[in-house]
Image (cartoon, rainbow, N blue to C red; front, side, top):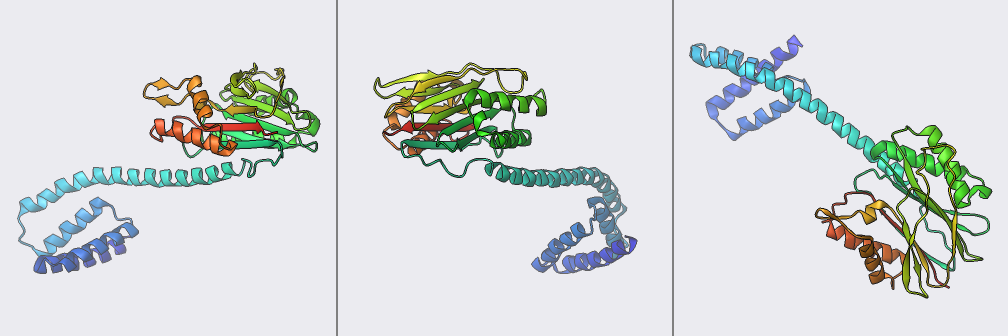
Length: 337
């Protein structure tokens, strides 16, 4: 290290001497290049001040004592600055490392979501899910069994970031591992509840709604676990009804039972699942009303299910200046015939 400092001192002496004699742009350029060498060798600001003083004394032995004394003061300042700067650099490097890890986790999280929507002749399905930040606490999924029944799931992990992503992966693989006879809504939530209660910290909870649509009978069965109520649109009556399902959030009690609801779905009817990021959109200090969500859906219900959810999202995001306060997930299942 001592030899390195001596070599740097010689280089700096040449740069300083050249600049003081010529005061050229070339000298300033060499100084900029020299700063990169200092960083490479991890030379602190206070060390450079000491080098500058030593070089100045060597080049100008008659330099005033007051000038040299001023470098003692500068040295003290730079020692404090150097410590703070190195700490800042360390924190910055750590932050960049964490952001890189979060980017990887966010990309992995996307692989947990279904890539394609089930293709059922009598159904039109649309979904949009937009995280408020890099990591999302919302989760959705489709399940299609051997009979062609479509399972529709939406969940909200109470928490953000990497812990929410880990919970999301647990929910997905727990659902994937369930046998078909456990895919009925009430039974499915009971199975997932035991998984969550056993594996998730007491500080975290998961709300969820799960429904199963039978394309042969056009019956929709669903259960809820403390999740934001969705909507059911009755085309014949041209009315929206709240899709409410009473149930405790997942992970509170291992013995929780979940009531199962059912309804007949006729041509033109559709089912809406959503997260609280939809109903809790803020316009200034006020939350949007659920009736306003219905009005937006009515405005675009002539479109396909996918264009409908995208249009509703765009309107609500625009009202918030495209700064989401919470994760946004909206799903629609509509019977065509």
